[in-house]
Image (tube, rainbow, N blue to C red; front, side, top):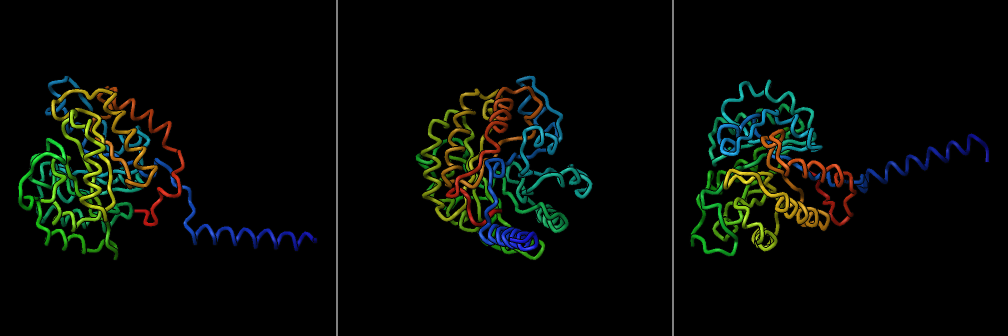
Length: 307
């Protein structure tokens, strides 16, 4: 075989290989690709949840994500961020961002939602929106507990959600994710959940983590057609004290199992506001990410639609 013929063969095989990888989307996806951190402004807990424990953090949200080894963020905005374009500059370093349409406590305004869409139009790494504290129902408890025999109260109506969901960003529709607490995994949430694309499950009271698998299974049954995410608190916000590492490990071990089996689309750690406060759970989680982040996900766990 001549050198020219050999070179032609090599180039042909390379081209075929590149084409096949593009055609079949064969990029190896890792655990880190599916990890998110809940973003809050720096110092958000210093005068509230952290005060009783004598804790303090001043780490900015993107810096916190980078310290944790996480490249994706769901950011919950507040009203005092200043000009959003200026505030957003560090966020350009992240791979993917979901910006809040409903803020902590379930607050939302038309102006805040319009500002979020305007910001998303200008930044390609804003790839979705998040609805925090969306349901105005008790957050403490489990899916099996008795609940109201009616449609849930929420920050927006199903019709309003439908309109938001259909509003394009950069010419295409982006995912809408809703928070749901374990006590809210009930039929009363169904009408609203039908109008979102993704749901993240949170356990507000640490003692309910003993029922985490059952609560997650109930959510799977309630919203079988949605992409699900598991939320993992790194602090006990229910009692305003550090969370035991054993409970952090329980959440993350289950999340890892659900992720590698394809039952969830991602794990969300809460939050950037806890990074730098000297919490053992944050240190443990950072080490877990360092150890497991580059693990390749099995083919069965990789969805065709990578958001």
